[in-house]
Length: 182
Image (cartoon, rainbow, N blue to C red):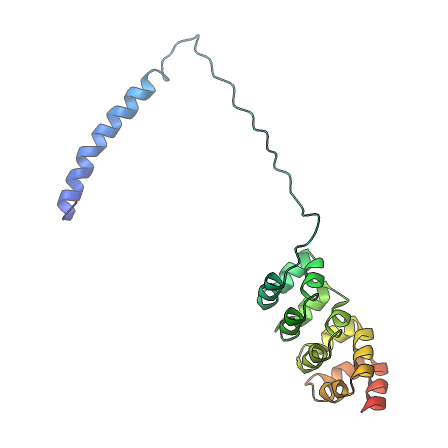
């Protein structure tokens, strides 16, 4: 055990020459100027550097819930849109995804996100409360049309959304449908 800086430096000064002597002795035969010395061929490896893609996306509830909580899920969805489909197969994960703060960017990666989220009434209601709902509906308005026809409360929740004016401006048919079901 080293107790002070001075004893540490003494130990370093003692160990350094010993290591140098050992390494120089081991390299003495390698550094000989023998003209007959030849290099050994390198070992070949059987594994290649190919990219491996899974043949299916894993679908289990706990992994879907964990992924739906992931803040940078939009980046993962950009690289593989099937990921969002596997998350929305589960009700609890879809509910968490409807609350996601970056839902608009996720909708850009998966254009059928609105239909997938509006399969359940409570998830559709939670989607209607999300401030980025307008970006999801702009990508796939058919999903919200079906949800409003199934549940009239969604039209009232959409009317309270902070981006309601943008939704109606981009999609006048949605305004007609909401006025019918309010």
